[in-house]
Length: 190
Image (cartoon, rainbow, N blue to C red; front, side, top):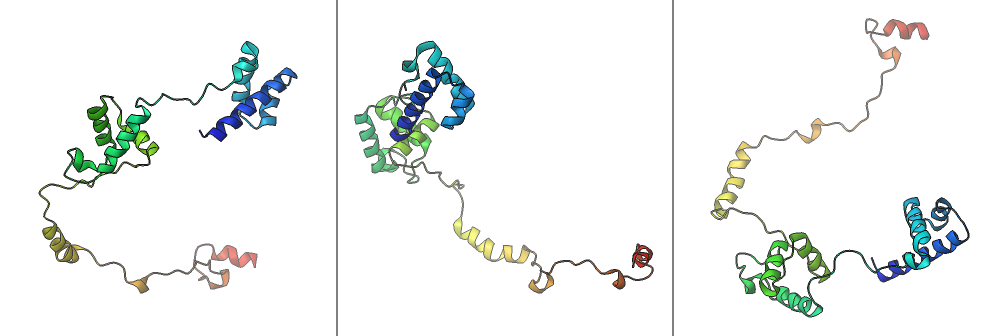
């Protein structure tokens, strides 16, 4: 949540406390402040137990970053160097798994893959997904197969003129043959 968002939320909580002091019910507080009734009832309970101080924000939620600001700067520099500089020479992509491994190697701190992803986004990087290819893949043979064999095997598509884009229109009763089902009923209605 941004600082502006936290400030707005803090302001709303203070407004809620003021309304509770005026004996406004939590459901009405929720309606007036445009918050969920669940939040209003939780705030009301906190307010009853500890007053307006209990509604004060305790800062952003979630766990704190396990790397210091200096370590984060070093990590950004390592990421700028590229994966090859740190032992991944097969391709030049930073995966979240590789970043988690790098953090463990350089800072002796364990990060999950999802935690490494969030940390990369925080530093302005995005994890990449490497293309999975068989090591023995022969690109030239694949290209020849696509151009020659696939063209022979593939069934031809429907010709362009065979389709119709017009809407289906129900025939009028006058157009029906006399022996068609329902023809006698249509004749009686006329």
